[in-house]
Length: 98
Image (cartoon, rainbow, N blue to C red; front, side):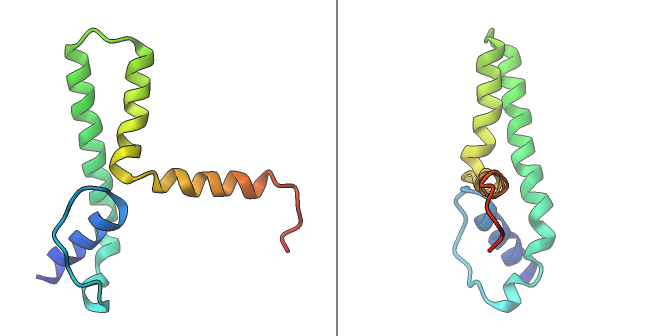
């Protein structure tokens, strides 16, 4: 049962997909990191399904590009973009590390 709770914690941590509540204790979080790739595969499967759906429609390349960019951001809540923007901000500030 702890593996299922660890999976739910990983899904709650890195996606906006609604999941049941579980206790975020040390025992349940022990294997949560093991499920991070599974969360990525779920997001990838959603993008793949979007691609199949858009292939059936006559949409422009610009619309397809925007859709492929926005869907992972909407599912993940933009957590990866937040880290990217923080890194770009730190590297482009031209200030000392202190």
